[in-house]
Length: 513
Ligand code: UN1
Image (cartoon, rainbow, N blue to C red):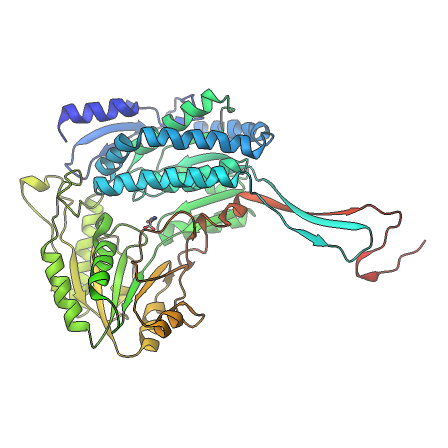
């Protein structure tokens, strides 16, 4: 990005060369923490830096957020929803610069950057409606002249740990829902995308200030994994929502559970698409290619495995080779390009390590990978999307590699395809391409996909916010964003009221004095 364009972008979002990184809303807190430098994977340039939290500033944030909760929970939920509605409007205003920053700091295409901001807007709209629908049930009591019902109360301070690959949307999924539920939030963004977090915090804080929302409802703590650990261990944070690797989730989850907190985990995926003989291959190809190379393979919903029926296997392989030959890799802000860079050198090393492991285990490359060199690729993070024929049992295939590597696996019967699909430790997303009703229903039945998301004739990625998002097994079991995911952000209370003159005991127990 040209320096004048960069300056203009940062100015539009209120970002400086060096930024404080710890905030309770409109106030920014000085710390003794180090500065995290943010480099664009697009051109390798330093964009700016953000000061990390230290233990003292973290503790201060928790105290302020816990205090703010006491007031925020007294606001009627639809009033809280009104604040979130205004945040949605602000995001509409800032969609272009924020989408551009997401693209520049994270490396996904500008189109996908805009899509991510749209996902934030969508969750705001959803949360506004939800603020009038935080329903509990009523039940019939077994005792005469008794009434039973359940209600949902605000929970407290919610910790939100997010990953670099969705630097703004996943925060919004959590924060917007938590806010209408009456919770306050402490957000620890990825240290790889700190500037996106500054932009979001500034947008939310402006709306909060305008509405006199108490300081501490929207907190930001930039920092590395040590800050994530403080969140996981903090007894004043009843819910910790964490998105990232299985390893991170296991550590956070265990820590949170050990203090009887509630973890909400959204971890790795190893998502497959099954292509059956009846599939519409034009449609399937588009779904597969976007699923495999979109966000340069760095979505937790990325299509990693393609399980193809032997009858269409050769045709699918040929069409994929053709489609991959047309992929344009380069600057994510250039609309001509389909694939941007990986996030950093470490990601490139992991990608190269995976290619080597495929070779070692006996895989055959259908489309060769490799790192792109040359002036256009100054950051060194641009890699070629690769396709390899493998066995599902390969150790490397069983692992989630956050890069554009697609595995091809052949099958004969649908039962076999389903076994392959489910035979991984992760359980996030899955899809089948079929025009056959029996195949489709089998895939969606209890004998079918074991994932949290199961799609028909669309890819594994690109879920809408209205559904509950998350997965089973090593994916962590959490559900975020739509449907009734909000229930995790509240505490449920069952109430029994006796409006009679007697006090009968439940289960017919006699206890007369
Ligand atoms: C993630 O990769 O962590 O379904 C989230 C999708 C996006 C969200 C992905 N809506 O691909």
